[in-house]
Picture (spheres, rainbow, N blue to C red):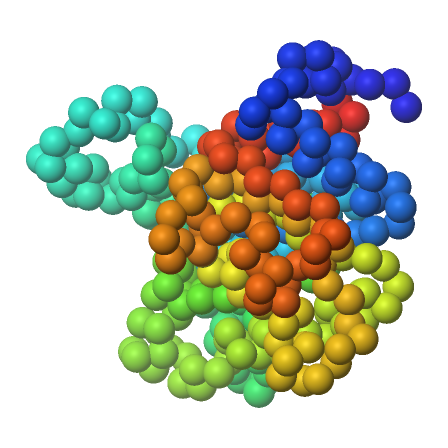
Length: 325
């Protein structure tokens, strides 16, 4: 396939330092796919509010991503943007805001994420109404589902379509729901919808707190996914940011080896992390990939890449390279 304009630009200009690491990681990603491998992606931070769906959705549609671990914030914020994009406000001068300015945003129910304000009523409360109906219905039937499965349900039902304010092809959650992509959302309870769910359990709207399945069950599900997938394909690990989105899934391998004594299960076959966290004492996000060898997550010969930069800049470029744009 002929190289696209972005790919040609990166190949010509990105020759050294973090730029070269970006191209090396992208080439490694393509090589892993070409050799029949699959990819596991992790999303930390606020990548959905950064509208990563503009490129990630196409990666999912073209089978360049085969499973995702994300924070609860990324799970819900892609859908917030899907239904309320026109109500978002950008604050390019956010560094200059005073505490009084911030209080003014609060009074207008505009929740700020760096330079972008999410409108509470049009985004969060609209999705709360839709997903609450699914929580209550599941409880009545004695069913329980993972957080991402409830989100898939409301997307697949079509009930939100009248409210779409962006092209759904730019929503990575829509793409994931269409493929029923395996997903794992550790720590969901600290997200906006997780807080709302706790509130509805306290108020009695939902009486069985286990209607939404969470952490330990997610790890058990991930264990099955990793074991079955790696019987047929090598699995690469592409990490955006750090924190629980990255650490939770990568730990499945040492758990399989050390706690379940399944030593025949292979290690992760590729590793790349995009992070602006500098290498420091005790930092997971800032740990160099080789540290993961000591934890039984990666091997000596595992292709390893670390790009110390802003993921909102780097990730779309790597995706463009992999897609041949």
